[in-house]
Image 1 (tube, helix red, strand yellow):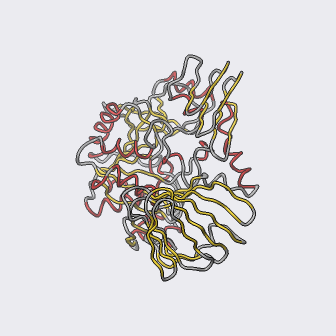
Image 2 (cartoon, helix red, strand yellow; image 1 turned 60 degrees about the horizontal axis):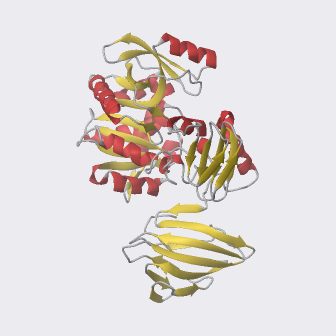
Image 3 (cartoon, one colour; image 1 turned 90 degrees about the vertical axis):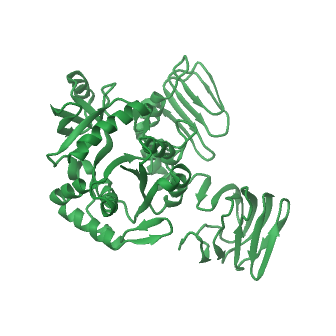
Length: 468
């Protein structure tokens, strides 16, 4: 079986913790591990012969690769890059094309990277049941046994029972409260989990049958693929021509071979701050408090501090989330509208929708400490063995001070080794490179001075990570 993890989302509804450049699947929002790490473990935990493949985008590729390297190791089956987003149906088609080259009958378990499943044993039993149906040619979706009349999920109506699973009678859009209560009372409706299981060849056959234009574009994009380090890049022009559609609309609602397996395993798509409040342990007053938080007369609230102390008094059913650069305060019943605030940030030309103060790069991270006219200060961390690109800047000079670890610095024709408390100066226009030759992270303070300090003032000559 191949566990295919879809990791292309931006997680807007968990802003400001989740940002476009580093969204919720990479964050430890429920446990000490990220949601993606938990998803990888979930797939591998189904058996020793399980391999993991990821479908992601250009921007997130190195973070996904790092997760797979540490979580799956030699059980990684590859990382496929989508040049543009075209929804889940084409993304899964790329994975199926890859799998079918090795074994057309390979079972593919498709999972989003940002869900929570608390009961691994129940999940394993449901997958084993689904595998039997998938081997027989069925296209399996997993229906979450509903605990409440939730209006934020789509539903699956079960039809004729086939023993451990049922035929799919219908996929239903998100209902209003009264309709959702009716679904719950009726008993044969399930929440749509977005988790699927089928043979690679059967998915491709059904996609060809119901969406031939999509299948043609995906096949053309795959046939013109190119290897880039650990990634597989499909042809951009061919994939751009692909219709944009979800697997539900493109295949599952049209095929006559869709079946649903009930899944009761503590599932959540962590689709909002309210959902995160629901699935985490609450204190006697119904509060979830993470980080440095003190409360008085606060009930039914979610309070999350990334650093600074949150002190809350006399609140009911609120969400407060503190990060280095944003503080969100919302009524818990309104958190689905966080995306409206994100749009306001975009409209005013801000960057808080896209980046955290700590920005992740394939070589490590950098974090802004101070900024004013003609200067800014950053904390830079370079992973062991990693190296920044060979580059120069047209508008700024840089001062580097090593505070931890060892740095190899190439500056023009010079090469020098710097240790803790040593520093160097990179004049404007001089070619330079920073490398960590050690076995511990390299940390340094960078002071930039100049007329323009934007991240786009970089001319790269060589780059280990094949960035332009």
